[in-house]
Image (cartoon, rainbow, N blue to C red):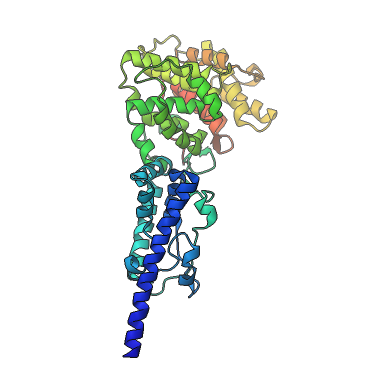
Length: 451
């Protein structure tokens, strides 16, 4: 009887101790807000603790450490009764009603759909373990990660899944390079669906945060994505200065709340994902009224020339918008040349730029240039020397002249261009942007550059 009474007393004492501890935790949260006057900061720290929290499974004295931890240090069967800390969601909502909803919205803005699913699965397994206790055979690998650094925000979870796929050339694989199957001409790959193409699309969509993925399918989100592609690499002060150049407009004007949801995604995914993201947004951009499309083109050009310097990406982007959103978009270009001979000067400019981009030294560049020109009837002593420099204006004029060729002659230019830039087996982001510009100016869809 003494043992039974003793165990009952111990259990009741633990219940009282846990209730007092939970109340002290609530008072500590309230005191934190009282002294810092920042409920969002305290709530954000608790939210990260809820995402990363684990248990001290490597010691039998974990329960003695509860008062030193931000969350539960041990797994319990009766979580609600014996827990020394209130549930994270209750603590956050006690700080400020509705704060948990805003924090979850921010999480969707910065983490991919795949990462969110993984987090939900881990939290579900964690709750099940807390309810059922330690499962037989479970490995005590996790430790209490809710440290002071986590509470202060220094241990922020990675916003994107950085798992590299070695068999894919996805630009999201972490190396900012594309891989290309050199045994298949690029013109043959146009319009064809390969298993690698499907994996590429899945990788891209899986890495997009849920909020960003929904926004780029809307007109307003697609417009702000276009602006974010041009200013993502700039300092915040310079971004605001350039955006101030845009005239106010309800649809194609600067909308700061939407832009701030897209900028972290564009920055995190890197330069290699810029054109794939733009392609996803193009259906929404085509739904703009003609006047809105023209204003969007003017705004994009204004951002591109704001620094008095046009980069290759800015040239490709402005050309892309002009060709696909202008009133003449979709019109057939009149055929002016049915032979390569009249456009050899334009080919020289194009292949000089591509050969120097794809070569490691001047000798290799000259060899690539000679090989490319040989495919168009220029060989031997007739091959001119490679140009040492080609301006963006000259490149734009050369592509405009090449676009006047017969459609049956254009695939040869596409294949020769791809051969130049893929000499080393991969294509860098800059080379991809050049290929994108060439293919778009020649009215050729750009296939995914993957194995």
